[in-house]
Length: 88
Image (tube, rainbow, N blue to C red; front, side, top):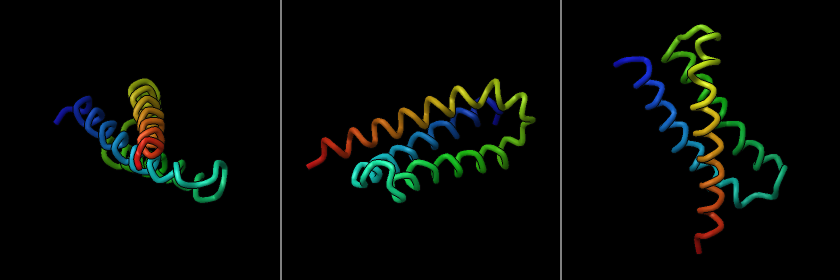
């Protein structure tokens, strides 16, 4: 599997993980300890997975990983919290 395909797959997995944590984050008070855990645990998981699977130098990671990572994480958290607010 090429690195670009693997990066896309990891970004999709990051979106799904952050969507789930965003869903749970919606039930906690903003800026509380559980709320911040739901925010930072998926980011840590994403960093570790990308480091061990792709094993890129940091210069390459800055160009190729950060845009996909930021979009996936912000969109996943935002949509997860939105979905939680709409659920009965």
